Amino acid sequence: MSVDDGTVAPESGRPSGDRPAYVLTRGVVLLFAVACGAAVANVYFAQPLLVTIGHDLGMSPALVGSTVTLTHVGYALGLLLLVPLGDVTDRRRLVVAQLLLLVAALAAVAAAPTAAVLLAATAVLGSLAVVTQTLVAFAASLAPPAGRGRVVGQVTAGVVIGILLARTVAGLLADLAGWRSVYLASAVLTALLALVLHRVLPRSGGAPPTPPRYGRLLRSTVTLFARDRVLRQRALFGLLVFAAFSTLWSSVALPLGRAPHSLSHSAIGALGLIGVVGALAASGAGRLSDRGLSRPTTGAALALLLVSWLPLALTPGSLWALVLGVVLLDLAVQAVHVTNQTLIYARHPDAGSRVIGGYMVFYAVGSGTGAVAATALYAAAGWGAVCALGAAFSLLGLVLWAGTRAGAPEPTGRPRPGGAPGPRRMGP
Image 1 (cartoon, one colour):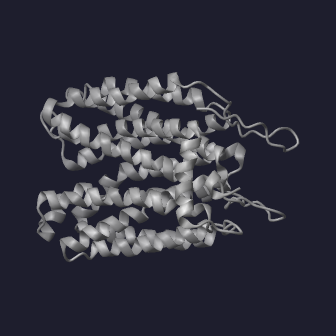
Image 2 (cartoon, one colour):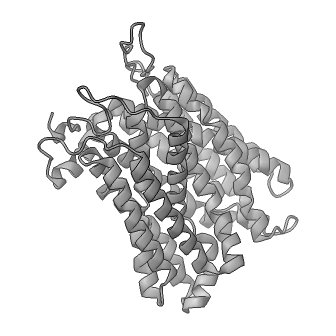
Image 3 (cartoon, rainbow, N blue to C red):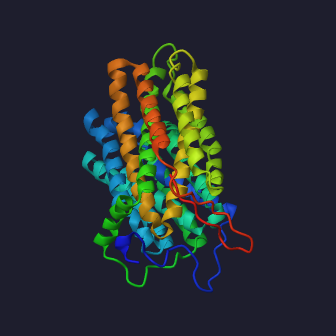
């Protein structure tokens, strides 16, 4: 098929001919998860360090705040421009190259002598952190169809844990050795991961016999989403659940820093540890997807997401209500996210990097929308309005799910007796 049809043959990452299949062990899946979490954490390290960075480099609050914006802009550009390359190149080589370039970007941030250098380096850092999505697509391509949802769930749990713990780790390291140590430590860890991944991961088969032009490759991502209704629906689910996720995590520090709680920055950062519980629990959503239960799993998770805002609304008066709400919300968001990625990859395995990269663009839009709207609403109307916003995003997702017809069935991924794969069931 041509790249304009959304596919590139042969699929990178799948065995062909007489070549033996790569065995994806639990240890390698864990390595994928750690690498994903470590890479995506770089996008969020700066958030608790802004005051310290601004003071060190003589930056105004508005200017130092733009480091976060530029990092996310770089990440969005990387999703569009770099992740699709995983469909037409050796993914192992692409991953290692991105990680090594990421090491250089991290070192540049750590050594930045001026604001201009810092801002440029953070933008580059964001664009290279999208290696996370290349790794997710790589893991999905190596997994057997019957266990793909489980693998995607475990690897994606690493992504969410990296996001949740990034601020906590950054704050602790900065208190011990200064803000620059955060990026130096990440550079060392990233270099080690590049070495290990190069030694452990297989070559993914290289480019197709006639690699498409880069422009056609990028346009094919748009074509895929334009032609596939389920991709668009899943992308909208992703946008809405991450808007709800960002609504909470971008603003929850504001009521917690006030009376009656008056929590310290370290105590607020520890909330990420609570969120990890929900993220880990949701890895089971991938197993449900493997059994052909993507649609009911999505509906249940969206309903749970809506319910989570009830205890979250009680946050000003009860930390226990906040803990319950955080666990429920992170469980629901992660369950939808895992189900989304499992399903869209199963629909287009030959274009796995492009569909996952395109889907994550919607994730980025949702995260940005939730963050901007939540902070503005808190300043104007308080925590109750923030929770109403999060509930509205959640309800809209549930209504969208209820209004979608089941269509063609979803992929079960379970083999038939004798080793032949069963029929793929595809649906929203």
